[in-house]
Length: 417
Ligand code: ADP
Ligand code: MG
Image (cartoon, rainbow, N blue to C red; front, top):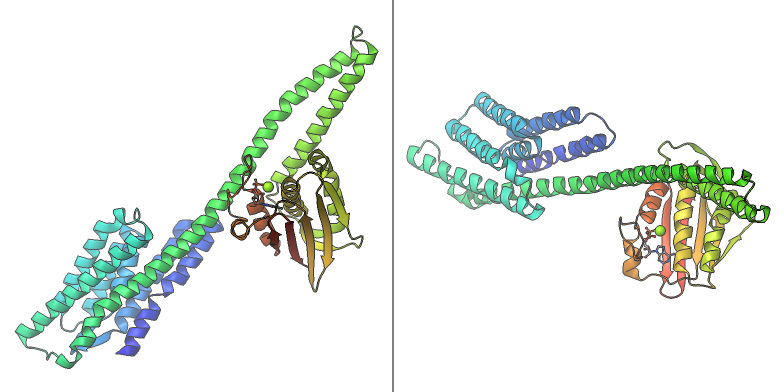
């Protein structure tokens, strides 16, 4: 009896694995209907296995966890797969034959009907209520099934009730409810985690698109202004000693244009090109880019280590990761402080260190790093580090941070060599 129970319990966990694949594929833009078809087929298979290895209850009467895949079918597969699974259950039960056929068909229909009625409202519920509801339904159904069976046996007297096993059988509704709680909570957890991931990547995508369209809109008026300045440069009534200002204005606009196109190129890193990157060179070019910002804040930006180190990855991504972290470091550092960039060649790993002598972070704050919208700045977006963590992971790397309140912060970006 116990073996059969274990087979049942194990087998109902199979769709979870299938679900992982389904959702994983969904992320990878594989057509959703195909994947959900697979999920339903597997669910139906689970139902058949559950029913083929039932737990013997009395002569010709078996119990199994068939209601769990049935419930999952209705709640996570949809109405049509649910009805098909219920139909399959009844047909297979008829095929298996034996006593208690009428009871079995009746309870299959009842369960199907109850879950059909639940189908819509169920997904609005918070996880706890979902668990409460499905386990309550299954507990109720199995308990009434047991009671029904007891009276059936009592009145027909066809099969002997093994009184010594009564206590074991009463556990059955509990097992059923427990099994459905386990399955549903795991499914919900997986769905939650994957949904979060999906939302994050969607958000990143739209942030990128917004930035691209805004910069595009900013460029046009700047080009118009630059054009008029060039015209004024040729005007005779403007004294030569004033024209120098026009030249300066044009130069500044050009500088703004290059900054914008630099940022635009950062945003548009959808296509990743893997190549061997010279980290030392990249750091010194980034130091150049960030220098004006550091100067404005009164922070010294220094690079240590002359040795050239290389990593494999996408240049745009690595640039963006470093830029985000360096920018944060400069922002966190009060006037007169220092931000240091360095590289360390470890054992099969390359570490890029960015340290600052800034305000630092507490433990709780460190834990929140990389969460979307976590920002302690009035004008912060809380997206920089999230994007950096993601991109580092895409390059098989990771980011670690150590910090002490009031002393400073140490970021390590670690990549395989
Ligand atoms: P944002 O810069 O827009 O606030 P980020 O994702 O780049 O968003 O950073 C999230 C938060 O992490 C910051 O608001 C800040 O509180 C904290 N942080 C990041 N880097 C540092 C640092 N070097 N020193 C202190 N705090 C930091
Ligand atoms: Mg930032």
